[in-house]
Structure formats: C-alpha cells, structure tokens
Image 1 (cartoon, rainbow, N blue to C red):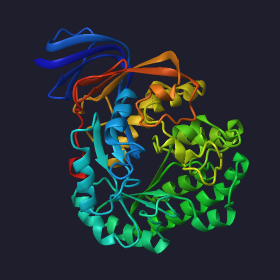
Image 2: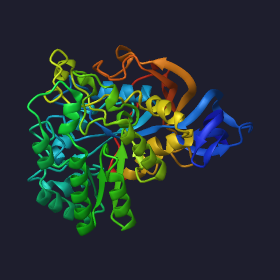
Image 3: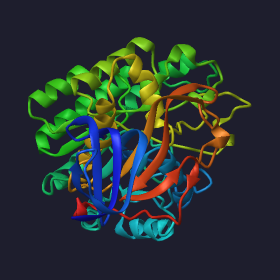
Image 4: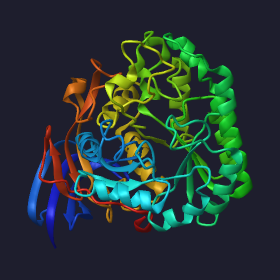
Length: 447
C-alpha cells in the first residue's frame, strides 16, 4: 500500500501507550500504525527525533474576535496554539462582541475567523437569560454546547444566569444530549466576600473563597440530577469540591470537570502584592490545595487540563495601580500549556501518556470529537514533536500571543514543542509557521 506520508518515531505516545512506531498518513488521516522499521511506499518518509505526541485539544479558549480583537484574535491565538502543539481549539462565546448567543452571532464570528486559523477551531454557544429559544438553533448550527455564568461574567453583554435560567436551559439540552459548561461561583457568596479595592493578594483570595465554588457546584449537581442534562465544571480551583463531584459521579449524575495549568503550577504563596498578572477567577490558591488538585487528576475525578486562555491588553491589568479587584482577570497560557504541565507534573511522577490523556484525548471526548485527541488509526493526523528534557525561559515577547502579559515571565520550563502537524501537514517548525493558515471549522454535526 502507498501512503502520502510516513513519520517514524522511536518514541510515540499512541492511544495504547508509548512505543516506537511508523505513522502512515493519507488524506490527512492516520491509516496505519506500523512497525518502526516497516518498509513502505510513501510520498514522504522520514524519522523524527523526540517524542511524537497527539495534538492538544484545548476546549477552553477566549479568542475575543470580533469586538475585542486587541485582546486576542483568531490569527494570533491559533498561531500561538500551533506553536504550542495545540491543534484544536474550542472558542468561548465571550468576550467577543457580539457574544455567541444566537446563530447570527455565530455566523459573524465565523465570517471574521475565515482564512485566519492556523489550527482547527470549533465554537461554544452562550446561555444567558432570555436566549433559551436560541439553544436548539445554535445546536443545529454546530456549537459544541453552551457556557453560562452563575455570577457576573466580567462583561455586561454576557449576563449571569440565575438557577431558574440554568434549569430552563438544562431542560432543553437534556432533550438533545447537549452539554452545559459552567463558570461555577456563587454570586451571593462572592458579593458578601468582596472588597472595594485591594493590592494584597491575600485579600483578593479571601474575596473569592472556595465556598463560593463549592456552593455553586452543589447547585449545579442538583440541577443536573433533576433534569438529566450533561454538565461540566469549568476551571476548577477549589479542591474541596472534588469529593462532592466524585459522589455525584458515583450517583450517576452526568457531571465532569477540568482544571488549568495555572492552578496546577502556581500558588498563592509566590504571588506578590500588586502582581495582577496572576489574577484570574476563580483564583490561584495555596500549595496544599494544588496538591489535592493533582490528586484529583490522578484519580480521574478531574478529567482534563485546558488553558482557559483569557488575554487582555496590558493596561487592563492596572500594573501601575496593582488593584486585584479592579484589574482584568485572566491568564494567557495557550502556547505554553504543555511545558507548564510537564514541568510540574514530571516532578509528581506523571507520564507522557498522562499528559496526552489529560490534554488531548479527554477534551476531545468531552466535545465528541472522535477524530481528534490520539495517535490512532482513523484519527486526524494531528501531532506535535516534544523534547521532554529540554528547558527554556519564558519570554512573553517571544510568544505568539497578541499581548505579552504572563505570570510565567522569567520562569524556566521543561519540555519544548518543536514541530506541529495539522491533518498531516507541518504547520509549525522550530518557531516558523509553515504556509498559509490550514485550520478548518469544526462543528457538533461532525463530532
């Protein structure tokens, strides 16, 4: 048999584990996994040095275009993704203007993204008060599910859902096996804990207590239990909630959760007062909490790691003032998520197969992208080449993110992504982007 391309790697993390392999690719698909030394007829046939990994599927990315394109846009976000081994991103329905809460808004977003995407892109819809009639049309238009906030989102055009709003939406989604992904912090708990201003990180942390997450997650569990709808807790930072989620899962509640690189690698003890580059919501917590999040991952209760890439322009971080309450909350890590997790995780005994499970296969499973997330026959040939022993120092000016704001500036990370393939085409090679953008739009109908 003749193939378009064969990539040989003495180390490859496949769907069944790490092994030497020759990956045979035709029409952008993996059509065979052969012995490393297999003799084949192929248009291209070469060996790579390093570990061949499945492309990362990042289901939590704020691209912000149109409307807030100075914060980030499709061109810069997807180039950063490609440079970091991320071959699929699912865009959040905010902070773009308009937010993706109607099919017309989705069409506007797609129209501006057309021809700009260096990796494959899908879209979440938004669930806000008053748009329950738009959920079925948005599902038909191909969104992978819906995001809602249980407190103010940070932007007025994407208002918070009450429990009644959430229940109405879940009743619709349950009929279609639709997925609701939720920013779960309780608005009342946050309001009662809030401060007018604070330069001290300890005060900011106290204003976003674990209890606010725990209460909201408990409410979400009961609404999912009652309606039978699938729900997913976004960016879990409270380790207290892990046992509650595990109990609900054992009861048959259709709930899953994710966490993010910043919660697994940064801790509140290292954050200086006024260092608003560390602000995110929910917040980065103490080291003991971080240890328990890692335990939740290893146990499988937390099923995945995604970036929650939430950029802004430097002025919105209010560095001159250092006010954690007023600064924009969000951390950019789309390009460096893999080395962040490998740097911390390798100290904790994780394997490259764990890395691939948490950052590739499980996110793909969450949104039903059966063609993504693994080096396996029938999958898209989305892969990256990884050197797990090489280190580098983070320089935000050298990242492809639009704005050079990062709490990782100056940190030494372990693990370098050197090449990225999208459906068998090399799109990034040692800092160079290859050819014109090759990304395609993904939709629920293709899941």
